[in-house]
Length: 100
Image 1 (spheres, helix red, strand yellow):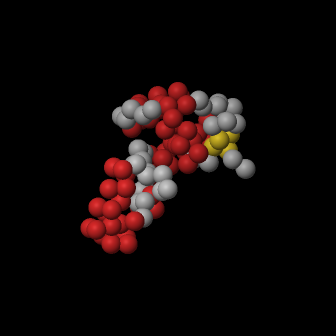
Image 2 (cartoon, helix red, strand yellow; image 1 turned 180 degrees about the vertical axis):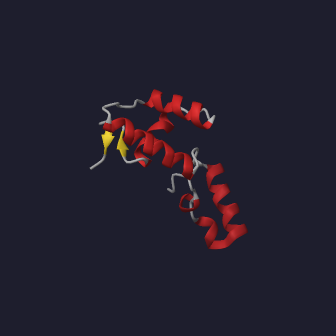
Image 3 (spheres, rainbow, N blue to C red; image 1 turned 90 degrees about the vertical axis):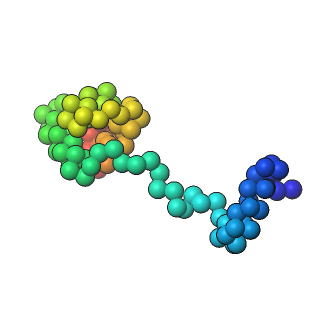
């Protein structure tokens, strides 16, 4: 009736016995997600470079972002994370320009 497996129901009951009603929540509200890769200063430096290049007609790809992050910050990132950096800088990965 609850669509819980036996082991899933036992986990919920264990949390309820340990934490009371607070143990019945699913905990997603407290999940902050993946940690940030770039510091605030690195993100600002990246955004400035994107805008500067865009004004000169240079459009960045995710692979370009990966290369820049490795060379400038010494960090290796997955291609999927590069689009987060572009969005945070105010650019759209689908239409490589500033979001208006």
